[in-house]
Image (tube, rainbow, N blue to C red; front, top):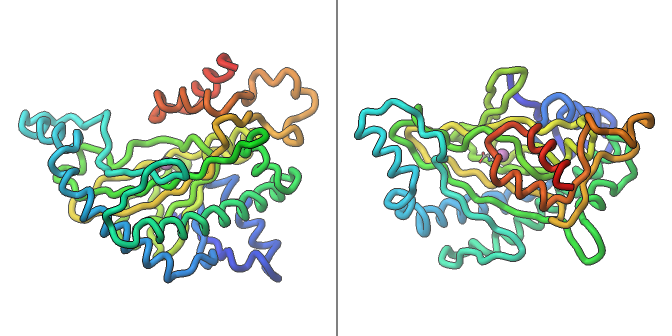
Length: 311
Ligand code: OGA
Ligand code: NI
């Protein structure tokens, strides 16, 4: 069962109503869908693939093989003939690009290309947020404004460049352990060929099938809260693969750390709005992230409970 594939170019034209409905279905029933014809130039995507792979080879691969805790711990398990699975590590190499951190500099073209890419993806995220506003029946610009926080704040936009190297014992370690994403909207440019990403749908793990140059969209815990549970964040994981390196680039459009997140008033039934104890909490996003950092690979419900107490 493939996850929905949506032609985003049909949003502006005769196909608008149908496309809006497909996106609503993707958000409500799946939590994950793929966009094709999303308007990001293919030439830019080709460069992003190239510089990301060059970066991994030039600046990361050797270090992963020599120094990664996962490599060491897996080797120890195998040497001991222990058949357990590595529970506390992921078989991945990651760097985060944001507006405020240092970026790698050795790989030719990396910085310029990724800057151009992030600008495009941010625009796509903002367009999608407006689609979600409309589908949810909340005012246009609501999600963007909620994520922005107060005066002088801005939403957080981060880009995680990940590589999942070939693993000698893929049955003993995860590429990335199962989790739901903490933030808002996630836009993933995954490998054209190497599969591995799976989502939990109706109790079964299913593949997010690679489609060259598509962008996979999913929603995180903050959209679940803001939509009052209409758009649920969905569990996903990455399987380690035995023979090939998988590249994936995930961009996160998240609230500012200072933003207050709560269910949109329009989506909360009136009689429950002041005693919404059993529903979703209201909190400051940085408090949520403190809890998430400790509990990323655990169910989200206790996080929603814990953050309610903090506030
Ligand atoms: C993540 C994630 C999936 C992937 O970074 O949160 O789920 O394919 N990544 O790398
Ligand atoms: Ni994730």
